[in-house]
Amino acid sequence: MRLTLVLLVTLFASLGFSSRLEAGEKRMNLICICTDDQGYWSLGAYGNKESKTPNMDRIAREGARFKYAFCATPVCSPSRASFLTGRYGSQVKITDWINPTESKAGVGLAANAMTWMRVLQRAGYRTGLIGKWHLGELAHNHPTKCGFDRFMGFLGGGNKPMDPTLEIDGQVKNVKGSLPDILTDDAIEFVTRNKGRPFALMLNTREPHLPYGPVPAEDAAVFKNLDPTIPNFPGLDVKQVKRWTSDYYASIHSVDRNIGRLLAALEQLGLLENTIILFTSDHGYMIGHHGLHTKGNATWVVGPNRGVQRGNMYDLSLRVPLFIRWPGVVRPGTTIDEFVCNIDMFATALGMLKVEAPADYQQEGKDFSPILRGGKIAWRDAHFSQFDIHNGLGQKATPSAMRSVRTRDWHLVRQYNKNHPDELFDLTNDPDELTNLYDVAAHRAIRDQLQNRLDAWMRGIDDPILRRTSR
Image (cartoon, rainbow, N blue to C red; front, side, top):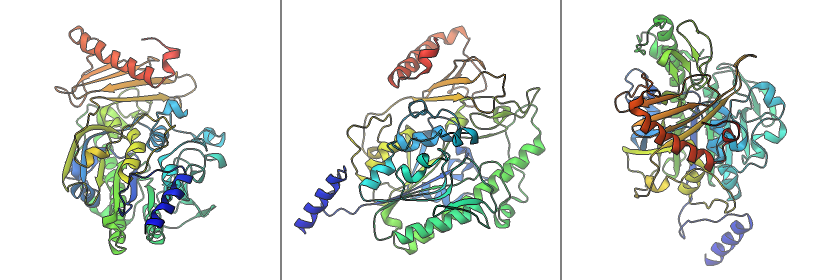
């Protein structure tokens, strides 16, 4: 036994891997389930009584629910890049969603990019990505060049909810059926095939991204007679927003139902208690909130600018659901109040699995696994985010450059290219961020204080906006 341990240590060292496991400690598996465009407000675990999310809520109930989880950028590609690399979009040169033209030109995550999946792969984990990638479509951007042993899904940003086109074993095929069902079938096959070794899997659904449907009849039927609650915002087309909301919930339900299938399969395989399950989304979402539809690159659905893009960093675009079920470590029903960000995933995934990060790799996130273990550690008191919009603006529009700092009580949003007003929100008295206080003299001191913090953060990550603009 002693000789075996020595040989394992030698092997892991040759792979550039260092483990913090105690002698005889069993290695945990990790499954990350990431939906697309799901606002935290859409889940029962965050108080929604109309959306039906029993399996997502189960992960929260049997693990930890994060009250203040955020994304680094409120659109898809840069957020996903941050999730994998622990670096901001400007640092990996992905600052907006990657459109098809850019993707075919080679824009995406570089083949030499350090991802936490690559670190786990080197540590002997079998790694997989099933579903959405949206970090480049050329060979050098492929998931299998970025730390994944297996990829089944789609490289671009979108797909059909029914009868999708998918890459399977390196071949692009048309597949019949509901996309969440198809992806979950493959996820179950992956964990079944790898049940005898440690694995790390990302299951990235397309849902509930637009178009919300069609969905299987069993998911649509749940909301057939629902009269959903919608935001009270002047000028909304109430009938349309209610329809969007019901269809959105049905799309979410199609994922939730499949999470139930995956949990059941893990239990049947005897893997459920040896697998950490993380549930989140790539960014937040709005359906009529603030008179907008979708996320950080939302469009107006009210007023004379209906259909025009409105770049934003509202809380609803930045906040994401986050639940972590960690058997034997996280007490069921735990609520975590600290500010965390998806940029923390690099450090935290490795921290949870007790795998050392490469000593020469600089990433910006923090390991919150000690918090999950019940420890008391120094933590951040603010969230910083960035978003440079250049897609979907039209030929005459100026690209937008937004930066944000959000504390418990205040939220400052800067529009460096002045596409929209700078914003300051008093979250204590205005949690819905409806009243902009940026130009109110009485709040100038807090505004300047937040600006100083934002400037310091931007300098710390060598934000290129500093080289192009001044305050």
